[in-house]
Length: 165
Ligand SMILES: [Zn+2]
Ligand SMILES: [Zn+2]
Image (tube, rainbow, N blue to C red; front, side, top):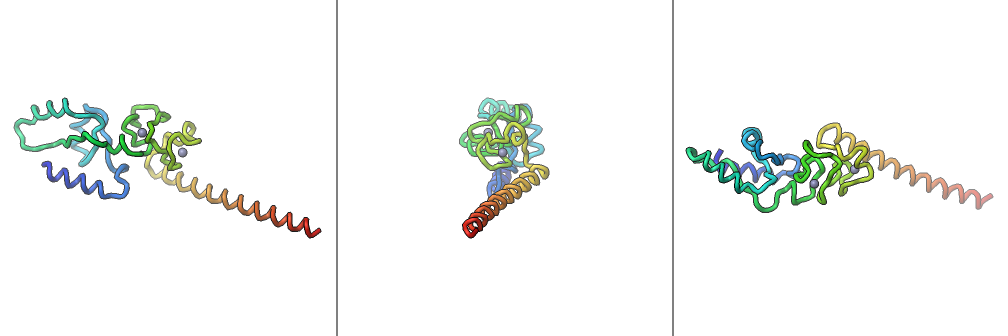
């Protein structure tokens, strides 16, 4: 893949509404080559200067530029992200309870840690089970609010009745 086609792919990814979920975060230098084969676009969680140097030596025979250096903001590190996308504390290698300043709870959509963090929510990832759980939880919260509202109305009615007695 040449540099231009890679740029196009990156642009495409950026135009999606939820780029974080589709961009793979690379944190392990040794997996770069393997990742290059699998992912069209991924984020490096390190400054790859030394690596770029090695890379250019090993690729002397080809014209292909296979890596785009990223020195400025890195999406999974410099912008708010769900815990499972955290670049500072890679989900597969660190304790799920850890979180950085920009980590969000995937379930609550709030800054980590939420009240259910250590029991539950720190383990959340963007899969069908967690998405259903998230939806269900929202619905439960909506119903709870509704119950509270109805209780208040009932109390008010009781008071009116008492006054009438
Ligand atoms: Zn984080
Ligand atoms: Zn939560």
